[in-house]
Image (cartoon, rainbow, N blue to C red; front, side):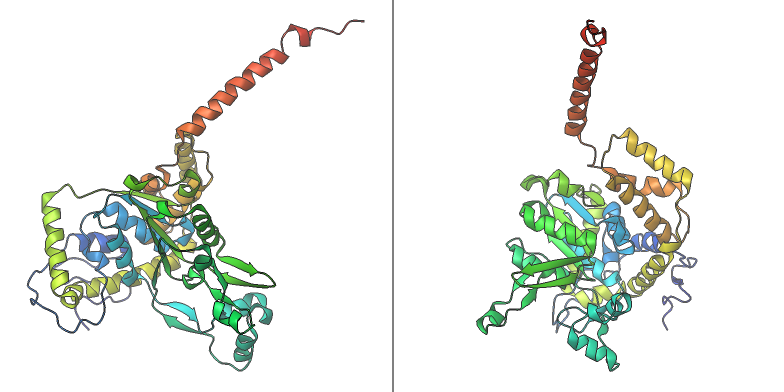
Length: 401
C-alpha cells in the first residue's frame, strides 16, 4: 500500500508532512495547493482512447469545482448551469468529474429493469424476461462506472425521449427504442450550449430530471423509463440567453470567468501541455488523491440524510430570499439542499450560517426578475386605484328610499 492511500476514510499526505484530511473540502483545498511535478516522460505511446483531464488538476475556478461536487453529492439540488465565455474550462471540468464518481448499479435489461423495481412495486414492474430471471435467482444488474452522456445540438425529440424502433416496424412488430434520457439514467447528462436547444427538448429534459422517470407513448404502445441523472448545462451568453423558466429549473448557477492571475494561467498551460504529452503519466500524479476524493464523496452521500437544517439558519436564508424579491420557491430548495451538501462535504451533520453564505451566490444569482418586480408593482398600483374607486362616495352612500 502506498503512503498516500486512504485508511479508515482518511487521506494521508506523509510526504508533505501534513495531518490527515478528514473531509472532502479539506482534501480539495489540499490538492489545490499541491505543486505540479513537471518531470514527466516526453511521450506516452499506446494510448487507446482519450482520457479525461483529472478534476483535481484544475487550476482556480473554485466556485465551478464546488458546484460540480455539490451536484454529485446531492442531486436534489437540481443540477448546474455553467455560464461563461469560450475557453474557460467548462467542458473540461464537466468531463473530469467522472473519475470522482463511484460505480453505480446498471440494468442488464434493454428496458432498464432493476431489482429495486420489484422490491418497490412487485413483479409487474419489470418485463416478463426479468421477472423470470429474478424468480430463478439470476442477476438483473451489474456494477459499472458512471458515463458522461452528451446531448448533441441537432437532437430531435424522439432522439431524446425515445420513439418507434424503425427496424422493428419493418417486421410489423412495433417496439420502442430507448432515448438519450433513458440511457442517461444513473449517469451524468451534459448539455453544452443549452441556450441553443429547442424549447420542447429542454422542457422534456427538465421534467424527466425532476420526476426521475418519464413515459413514452406512441400509438398503442408505451414504456416508462428511469431518468435519475446528474444534469449539467453550459452556455456562452454571447450566443443568446436562456429562457427564465428554464434557468429557474437549474439549482446552481455559476459564472465562469477567465483566470486573472498570470501565475495561474501559466500553471494551466504547463499542466495542459504535460497532459497532452503524457496523459497516463499526468493522471498518475493525481491517482491517490482522486481515489481518496471518490471515497469522500461516497461518505458525504451517506452522511447527507443525517444533515439537519436548524430553524434559525433556515429563517436567515428565507430573509435573504425575501430581501432579494425572489418569487420562485425553487430558490429555497436549491439554497437549503446545497447547504446540506456543503455540510456533508465538510463531514458535519448540521447546516450553519457559513454554509448558507458559501453556496448563496451560486444558488440565488440570476433568480430575481426586474420585469416581474415592475409588473407586480404596476398591478398593485392599479388594484389600489380600484379600491379607492369602490370606496368613493357614490359607493359608500346609502341607496335612495
